[in-house]
Image (tube, rainbow, N blue to C red; front, side):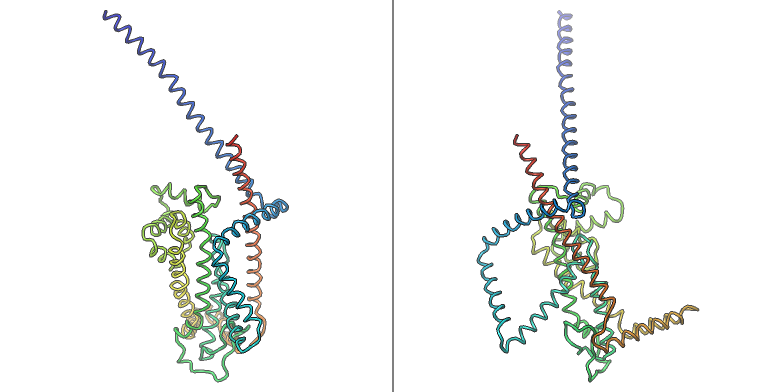
Amino acid sequence: LDCLTCQTVIDMAANGASCEQPQKRAGAKDKLNGKSADLSLRERRQKDKEERLSLVLWRRPVTTLHYFLLETLLKLKEWTFKLWQRRGIVFLCLVLCSLFSIAYSTEGEHQQYVQYLEKKFLWCAYWVGLGILSSVGLGTGLHTFLLYLGPHIASVTLAAYECGSTDFPEPPYPDQIVCPEDGGVEDTISLFSIMSKVRLEACMWGAGTAIGELPPYFMARAARQSGADPDDEDYEEFEEMLEQAEGAQDFVTRAKLGVQHMVQKVGFFGILACASIPNPLFDLAGITCGHFLVPFWTFFGATLIGKAIIKMHIQKLFVIITFSKHIVEQMVSLIGSVPKLGPSLQKPFRQYLEAQRNKLHHAGGSNWLSWVFEKVVLVMVCYFVISIVNSMAQSYAKRLQQLRHSEEKTK
């Protein structure tokens, strides 16, 4: 009996082992099939991405323009539907525009106020546009502070000390700043008077940089709400950083993590702190706010206050102090104190400053630097337009690919 019992147990164990073995093999096979499916899906996504990225004007101009027009029509249809949903606000805006158009075209005493508002509006739009060019494109924009706003503040500062007054023409300025005929007293010039003179331009430029930070926010927010992975490399880098946050050792990754944690935990004041200092990683703050669905006005309000008010006053004060008359004279004297090379360097520097002071007294004239900067801005605008055409064509290609995948799943 004992032998029969042992034999039965052995047979059962053998049968169990034989039953378990196919299961194990089947499990390994399922894992292998899952890995191959994931690999094929990843390869398909990579192939689709490469196909979309090939849609650029300089490679496939006809197809790119065709997709761009189709995507434009789809966007216009979507926007028309959204505007119809808010037709009350649209009607009010149309009425206001009509009234302004009538006031602009009708002769009368009010034309002086209309012209004043027009000049102010165009002047503000000019600096807002330069600010947008500086920050749009996830950090690839033109740094217009160094090219436009900084030299403008420096020119106003030099003119204030040279003229002894800040009563030269209000913006929009002529080609050259003209000193008032009666002159002024140099001792009355202060940092606050110069800051007041350039406050409008600086704040408008800062507001433009805040507007330029919106594309990363909307891109990440739309990706999070739709559940789709965007093609933007910065967003993919952000996702990888979140996954590898624990093992980060290098300084750049830790700095990015610091920005992300500050924005996520502190909220409005964290965004305000990141926007109030020169921060090349602020694009990551916009992506973080969009990814974690931070309310729009929380993000944009903090960004606007930080960039247009706090940060701009810091940068403006730095430029004014750097180009104030007393500090410039001290710099010239320090250059002259350098052994051997000092006197030779001091002379051309003095001549340059003297030439700049002389230009402040004369209206008109040509400035080749301004001409070069205008051409650079024109090139940047053209590049921006081409980028929009390419991105909209790629967006339409993505629609087609998603439609094709959904049809394959249905079959």
